[in-house]
Image 1 (tube, one colour):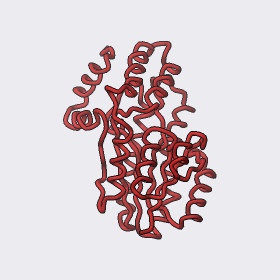
Image 2: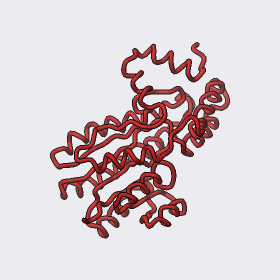
Image 3: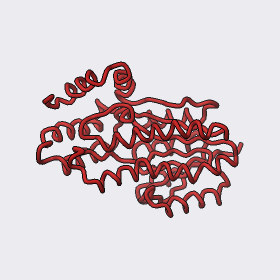
Image 4: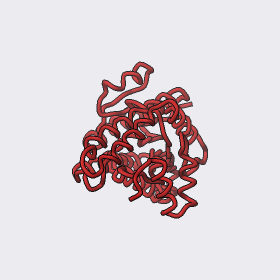
Length: 277
């Protein structure tokens, strides 16, 4: 049986690295990509092909897809995992940083999907997995631009799912909860730089502590939890449209679905310890 070809972005750590390893272990030919290939050595040591790819650079994405197609002749799975969390009060985040957040989290995934879809249409099969977040369904203070990107990924995925269905292509959204990766610490540091002083300083201190706690063993799931869900989705004959997994994701999304906005606001304020007025 010929191995299926999978491309995983943001594969240098966390969910991306765990996913590349998992798909490799179950028999996929995996291409793990990130901006810096020196951070992909763990994958290379396991026999996974690694490539440098910057999802904000069109030439980088085009050349990467061309390389895979020339070598393999097809792409069966794309996992759009590359992304980061930009936190800070909406009033204080520079618009240049807001645009960069969308460039990485939304436009990079969308453009890479554009490049892959013609090949999937030609073979009349394929699966695109877009890594959203429980933050694509709920919201937290000082995370406006990050949440906006994840809400956008959810909407784009829903539209693409209908558009690509006639061609035998699956579009799947994965919504992780709290995961033990470097993501939270990086987001916390960025938050303190943007809003650590001034009118939002008290809120920033509270939120930075909460973001950093995602790396704590008691408040985050292993990246392997999400990797296993992705493996389930890309091997299913008829995958679900959405998979939710990881610390806190299911109950928080459930509460958001059933509660009025003001009630959910109150819960967020109480959980975070933010001032109500």
